[in-house]
Image (spheres, helix red, strand yellow):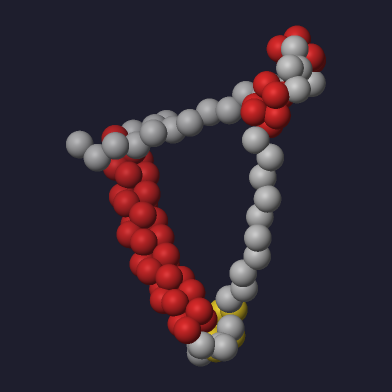
Length: 93
């Protein structure tokens, strides 16, 4: 059963995750900065090791491509799949 206590627990956990994620992202930014200023790409801690790498990612704007090629909406629909998803939103009061 979902109680007010469990909702509050969920909210507190998500708040902690947000804080921890921000701290982790700050450390990652420091690693990126140091890696770009030096040749260092590997770091060792007492319990963990970290490495830095860069890559390029290409993406295709399928909507623009379909429009430019005048692909009919029916053909796009024929090759489109739909999946059910759910979302739980939690907001602090």
